[in-house]
Amino acid sequence: MRPPARRLARRKGCDMEIRDAVLADAPAACAVLRRSITELCVADHRNDPAILERWLANKTPEIVASWIAQPAISMLVAVEGGIILAVGAVTNAGEITLNYVSPDARFRGVSRAMLGALEARAAERGNTRCTLISTATARRFYHAAGYVEDGPPQGKFGTTGSYPYMFIERLATEWASGGMRFDRAGEALLVVHVHSEIAAVGGLTVDPAIPEALRMRRFYVGKRFRRRGIGRRLAAALLEAAVRTDRPVTVNAAAGSEPFWEPLGFVAEGSDGHTHVLKRSGNS
Picture 1: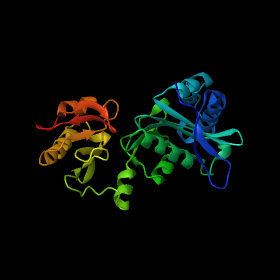
Picture 2: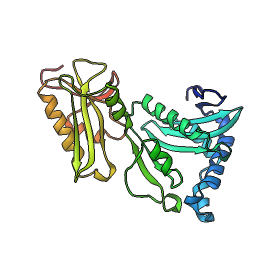
Picture 3: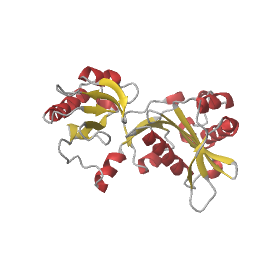
Picture 4: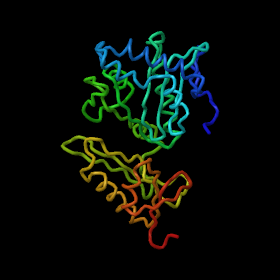
């Protein structure tokens, strides 16, 4: 059963709040999605009826209600005076699948507030990064919010855009604040460069819940560099560093990434904020 709706944020100086969507929101949320796409995304659909038909095909009250009911998705709405101004959604794996604002609420900071709420929910689910597919219309918005492009346009619904993006600002923010510098005993932060471009990043820190263990943290391989063995070589280098400490290593594996971690020796053990552990000889 889906948990009851809760308020996530209220903007200072106004009555707008961002909260979990409930099934009763489906018709109004659907209307916002359809208006936002039709009226604000002209640069993408170019008023082409065929593209609009494909884009709007799954934007019905019934389908939106099914998204709200899915436990693996967090559907959020920005509401002011009982009126839905924006609709957002993020999966438990940190993929932002929706962030649409009503044409009536454009240029009021509603989209940015919604993005912040989606990122916060992704972090609550244990994600260190968010990914999304941006419209051509929203590219400048996501660039300004700290996202970087992570591959060529995908041309969803027949558009010429649909740009994949990733957001790894959390690592930079933690470094700048001094909250995570990877400089304690046993910790390490490694970066893989390919032709002067960052291809992957990964680190080891003291496990926040198990001080005698190390935790794989902020591990990410750019989409263009996957399936080239880069991630496996990066993980092996981090584990080689961990071997010298003779400490167990934990990881909070994202959904679907188990086939990557388990061949490296990690075994499923869901506790203390991690999903898998790699135990050294002599560790019980």
